[in-house]
Image (cartoon, rainbow, N blue to C red; front, side):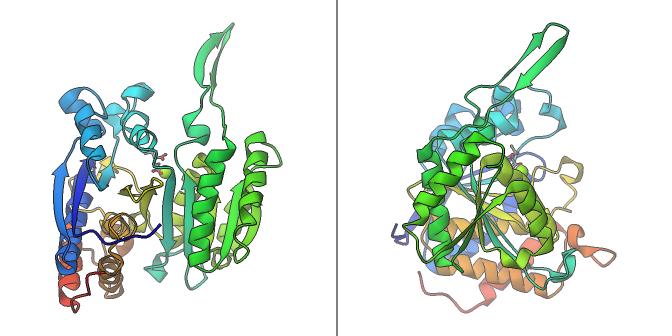
Length: 366
Ligand code: IPM
Ligand code: MG
């Protein structure tokens, strides 16, 4: 789809819980700085999501928030959840009842999770760089079981979920992944568990069908257990990975481990038009909330993804990415990456990124 740059954009900011508001604050500052230089006017409106919404309204995804999202061009989300709400049933819980419902109700099926080496010494790997794009199906599969439940059965209790996909659900995520692979290095790994699961056998057949439309892309099928191992052994061989919702959830945290910190991984969840939700891969980290210790890079890089994928401003996105990379290259470290060395606060990191965006010669409005 052509991504014409917008001159005006309406962005809903749902900062959520725990460290969410802190990282979102820095992401908004970077977004504003980059947008101003690109001639993009932004209207930012704040909405409640997750535990913050439960406290104010009793529900994790209030109708007002959903209406705000539907009227926006893109969403910037912080993180949801925390011990206070952990015990709540799924429909009233910040995760399933808030964030997951938002993904599903807005049909944000294509969850893009890029992982690239920004701080080489933070990675436990010996390879020089990792540059992998995980494409996670985000509105189907095991997370959204049509059949799920929990009941007593005689002397025991049963809980069950089902993994199911329609061919159409697999096809549309496969097309997104092939298109992205064609625009990168042309290598796609489709990850499933087709030696055991029926839904994976369907997944594999459909991905093979879609492959015939993309002769320029080399396709490999991997079982998810093997993929988890290969990512550690030879991460440099991966380009784009496409997989089911739960497999993608697990593998994306593995990617975070490979690049050295969850604080470095952004994400975007896209619909078939340009609308999307952008959020760091990390969670609400309640243990460090309010201490200024969280790394805002993942949230800031998520704002860059928004500029690229939803607002059509590639060069403003690149301005943010360049600024984050250069701040990290200079050795600016939040505690997650500082080791025994000196660490800066969340807001100092954000200051450095904004200064770097503003220092760079103005980009053409893209
Ligand atoms: C993620 C998170 C969410 C998920 C949680 C918060 C529901 O782990 O975005 O990876 O499982 O999708
Ligand atoms: Mg996760």
